[in-house]
Amino acid sequence: MQIKKLPFLLAAFMFVAPFLSFASDSIAEPAHINGQSEEVAKDEKKAKINAYIKHHLKDTHDFHLFSNERTGKHYGFPLPVILWDDGLHFFMSSAFDHGHKLAESKGNYYKLHHGKIYRTEADGELTYDHSEAKHSEHGGETSVKSHIEEVSGGHAEENKDHGHPTNIVPLDFSITKNVFNIFFIGLLVFLIFSSVARGYKKGLAPKKAAKFFEPLVLFVRDEIAIPNIGEKHYRKYMGFLLTAFFFIWMVNLFGLTPLGVNVTNNIAVTGALALMTFFITQFTSKKDYWLHIFWMPGVPYPMRILLAPIELLGVFIKPFALMIRLYANITAGHIVLMSLISLMFIFDNIGAKGAFYGLTIFLSIIELLVAFLQAYIFTMLSALYFGMAVEEHDAH
Amino acid sequence: MDLFKEFSVGLFFWQTLLFLILLFLLRKFAWKPILKAVTDREESIEEALEQADKAREEMKKLQSDNEEIIREARVERDAILKEAREIKASIIDEAKTKAGEEGAKMIEQAKEQINNQKMAAITELKNQVAEMSITIAEKVLSKELESKDKQADLVNKQLNDFKLN
Image (cartoon, rainbow over all chains, first blue to last red; front, side, top):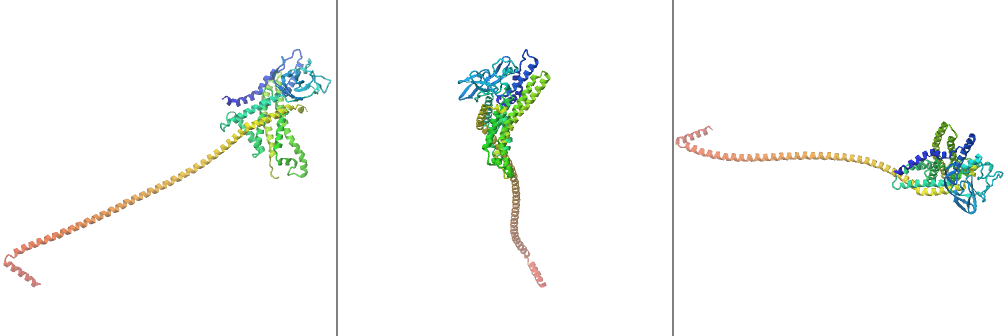
């Protein structure tokens, strides 16, 4: 009985999740700073929100849930840091204390700056390519900007005055928040679908969760794989298409939860997925595919020479577009959604707050659709490219 | 470009690794059994439908067969009844003719017997009458010829008769 309700509960949770995000965001609502003029407070608020959105979209080395500004405390849990810097370095991200401390491992010192890990000397100083301005996290500056960096955990907007650190950047294989999430979601997807698969052992009729997921599996097979790849070849691509579809969808849905986990708005994630599509396309392609790239049949010879570089470029542009599309759609959705939430805090008018609340709900529902749509588009286009790779052309 | 400066090699590495592991595991433990179950079910449904169609067809055929059999049986029954009726009629007819013949024969025999007995009776009667006539004649004659006169009369008379002739 409990398990029967699971899909509905899950769906219900996904549905209300975007609204819950107010809860965690409101905790981070800037407190009024005494002794400052109204104008400065407002500017600061705007800058802070801007920083908060950017921070929210970035990957971090700890799992940050929310912060209490008054006490300067961050709630969440640390994640392991794994570095390759002439040997393996392993320590928990709590060693950084949100960028306030240096982490020492095997005689090397590491500093967390703007979400990136740099190797420093024991004094923890970073050198910048614009050396006139020195940046110090420990300084007692009271300017608006440094205050923002303090409250947002030191990952605020890239400060152009300071330039970029020239310190050595070790290869960072840390289990960051995003890595933690993809593993969590991967596990979830595996648990869901292996249990769905086990359900079929008792009989061919779908049971429990399978009732919800089977139509989606069939959707991928009948609406995505078969029309684009063809009845003959679609089977060998089903594994990738199903995995990509459900992984991207789940990841997108989790991105809408108040946990603030945005994985698909990271170019590395979408890049990895698109690259997978690229390699599968190339490695499973048939002779016809390459023939149509380098020596397009049915067009005059000079045109063939002209078409070859264009087609070859297309081979790389296709997965590149896949990567950018998913990344940009999800990132844009998050920025708009978070901006709308933030607008509620900027406007003092109760009517405006209500209007933005309604707008946020509306946009959350749209984002729920986008989460599915982007998973669908990614899978659909992958299937289309696979279809091109295995297509058997009749004589032109 | 800011976009590619932010590209995280670590995240890329983990994502690729995770996805490959996930792909392998799901393929083995989820997609294959699920798709197989779904295909099996689709096939079994198709097969069941086909069989139902076939059964319906067979039923129809069976029904028409049944009707044919019933029709044939009815025809046969009618034929048998008709034959029985004919046999009955012929038996009765035969019996009647036989009885008639027998009756006629018996009547004939009876008639013959009656005739025979009648003849016998007539003969006996004739004999007795002849005897009686003789006796009577004897007695008459004896009485007639008691006197001489009477004898002479008679002879005369007889003689007269002869003369006439």
